[in-house]
Amino acid sequence: MDVDFSVILVSLVAFCGLLWLLDSLLIKKSRLQAVEQYIATQSKGKSEEELALAIDDLSRESLPVEYAKSFFPVLLLVLVLRSFLIEPFQIPTGSMIPTLEVGDFILVNKYAYGVRLPVIGTKIMSVADPQRGEVMVFFPPHEAKYYIKRVIGLPGDTVRYEDKRLYINGEIVSEEYQRDISIETNIGSLDGTLHRETINGVEHATQHINGAARQRSRTTWVIPNGNYFMMGDNRDNSSDSREWGTASENKIVGKAIAVWMHKEPGFHLPTFSRNQRIK
Image 1: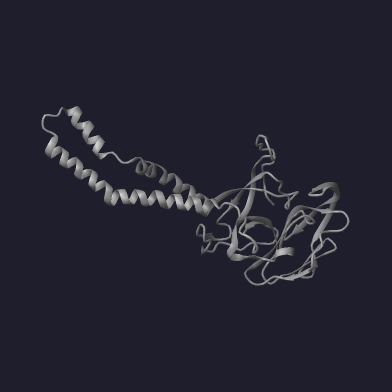
Image 2: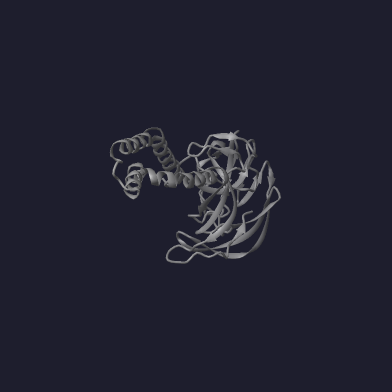
């Protein structure tokens, strides 16, 4: 399982906020009482400088409280931004090549498909539904890990993928051959082809490996209500809805909108040469 930064962030915000609240309601009062008692019993004969130093020492917040009050507003702002507006992700696999490459850093619009509570993901306000052709981040049904794929089938659709051709509700999806390419896989480089596919008016690149594709037990799927059929643009080298089923509406994270940075694996500096809008 990937480390869920949202859980860590919520925990830190809650801890800092609780510490600040406890200090305001309980601990601060005892500090003020200590100052009052000092002034009443020990201030006589003290110089103004000695009195000021003593009062400052007695009224000073503890280090944990001081840090909590400093970090709470910053952490809360980051939590709000990541939970309801924009969240960054890094692409870990090649399932969306050629659209997204390993090492791409992308921005995900968290409110495009509705406002959801952090961590638990409960939708509290509807905005719009995912549309065919959009690139979406979500949790798949088989593991608690972020996935990013393209929306192919909507609730009620019938999707068929056979002989490297995609059909939605009985109609073949437009796909235009571009050129021959070499495709990197876990067994080495294989010959393949690059295509230009159009779904719901969205044009995007896809690629196929020449010869036999990954063997799958099904070729046709009917999408149930509240679910979406997801596929990678690297069609013959993608673990997607053809293997583990549909993505549930309540597991949606957001809509991928842009690549803002790229870093090759290993000891390489990040670059901005791939900055682009995702389509």
